[in-house]
Image (cartoon, rainbow, N blue to C red; front, side, top):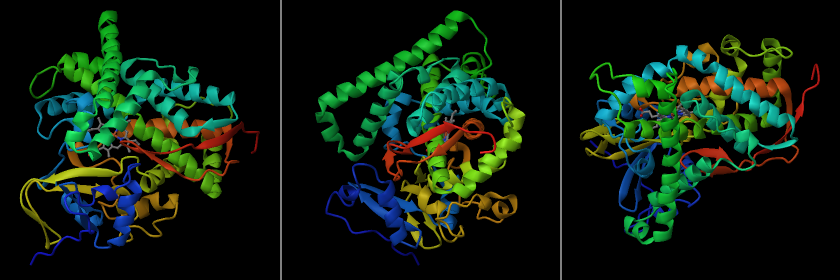
Length: 455
Ligand code: HEM
């Protein structure tokens, strides 16, 4: 016996589309999830019918890659306008995805992180030097500078020097505007998008600016003849171990752009949310200070090995990613007709979204889910958890290739910040979330002051 999937009432034709706030659906979907304890509901977004799931058992079912795959639907279909067949926006089964995935996978192993460490350290030191000259800092903007500079320097040998510039780099401004337009297009009927000529021209110009920068990075590497062992070097030199094929120039451009986009927005959001949460939880902040004082005393220069010894800081990041996953949903599609939980029928091609915040606070999997509790990441509690209750890095073969990169970079940055600065929130920041493709805290201004001994 099948059962109907709960569906909040909408309007004729547009369905629930007009209910989703223009500023982003993050909170709207979380509220709907709270009102539907079944762990599943269905929305009609102007003819796009999407089944939302967040019960861990249902998420386990949709994570089965023999039953579901990642489709490139809006907003990713629009991001594909500029990232093309890069890993993030490649279609399921697209040949170039397999080639690039196999070539790049070794470059993202834990072992490779050691090779990137000197550049990660260099950029983290730029952040520290910048904050030493400041009192109030815009955390989210500076985390964005940090993560963009890190992926560009480690991945492609390109120095943005973002901390030397008062404004975010023009590349970032173009990327921000293009992502915002991609999100607008997700909510617009295609006929309306076609009519907005000015917006379209601005969008095309932003895409051209991003492509120009990336083409210049590739051109100057080729011209230098340098054989660097970074992501770009690998993409220019290596052949796919299965097919023997090398990546085309266009695909390399798409991958570089993809890493610049996917490789910084998410990590900067994570670090910003972590600092916001530490301001709200002084007992955890005290634990973090104690840890950095023990592992990184005085002016010790961190090494890869010292960062791997951290324990409190990684758990802070795990918990920040649980409460504020920068990517809010994972899009999937049914491969064939199927039934969830033995009762909810889905047709082949049915769109599904795993809602990460509702999953990450699901009472079936988490004790006191709303609490910032880093001890839930202690090994014994972690081992007892539902295996599909936590997916900030996505699922299966389309999960995040940059996970170790992000975590290494974020651990190092957070440890260096806390080692050097006493951080406070004199302005009483109220969390407001800014949503583009990812979410980040908006206007998070905190005060930083060099720490005194024993503070
Ligand atoms: C994919 C999250 C950092 C590169 C993904 C996905 C998620 C995710 C959820 C799957 C998206 C989907 O299913 O549509 C995160 C988070 C990060 C982070 C939370 C930081 C805390 C990074 C970094 C890089 C990166 C640093 C690169 C250096 C990618 C790429 C993909 C991806 C290339 C596409 C993988 C594929 O489909 O083959 N990420 N990411 N990410 N991420 Fe990350």
